[in-house]
Length: 365
Figure 1 (cartoon, one colour):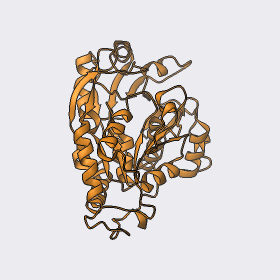
Figure 2 (figure 1 turned 135 degrees about the vertical axis):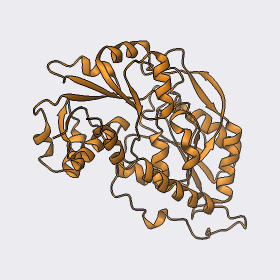
Figure 3 (figure 1 turned 90 degrees about the vertical axis):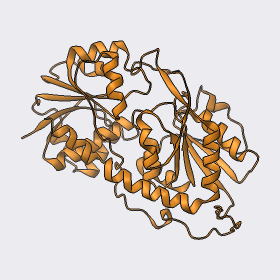
């Protein structure tokens, strides 16, 4: 029987946590024996009980060690564990600049790991150029963490607007058109460029609003935001609340400076929401499922925690003027934008599922 050790926390509020938990679900369906290692998050325990069975964690935690161990994100985390860690070490990680990872990571990977998985094709070459000698493979990450994924009736293309302007513009009952973006206040997610594009497109038009979802608002630039068109939405959301938020707004904009995969924007599309984003690195394929914004220029990456990237790395600055034009076009013909989002959703659910991701790993076991 195929088996794998997963070194995981399984926090369902984080991207890596979603990957870890979803892989447990899909490996179980594929008949791959999972041995849980590491300090499992309380929320992860609950998720596994709800999605597999009440006794699943107890049956799969700290059992007989499999030959292969899969670590997530930081290569050093697994190496620094006490006790047995497995004979063969694999790593699933991501980076967000044109030079990655840091040389500290390169040395750790080359010394201990025999296989590396990343979320997009371009990172394969970037890792090789950095000096990673282990095989690096791009595998399809998943967008279907939430279940079920059937579209509720309110996510289907809307009928004629209640107060039609004659140009097919969207108007909800309150007359508001809400854009959503996401930021943790660290700069990489590009919220500052989303604000610039939003203001360029809709500045002074109060019926257009921009919401910024952020888990963290203390001690960063988001804390000082004071604008009648912009609302900061702090705090954590569980998966149901997150998908509900994504589906309740009219559109999503993410002028991120760099993504290894771009899960947040893809989830917005899966929720049926028209999505605008930077076409670079992990989101190079956004023209298949959303509205691509070209890269205006490359600039020095300003990471707060940079080990996943080389300090000399560059990241992408999206073209704000083009983004503003796209935003106006989406608001001007919302029915078409909504139908395009549904088509993008179908594309993502065909090509990016956690089952495909688990199969890509399992076939190498």
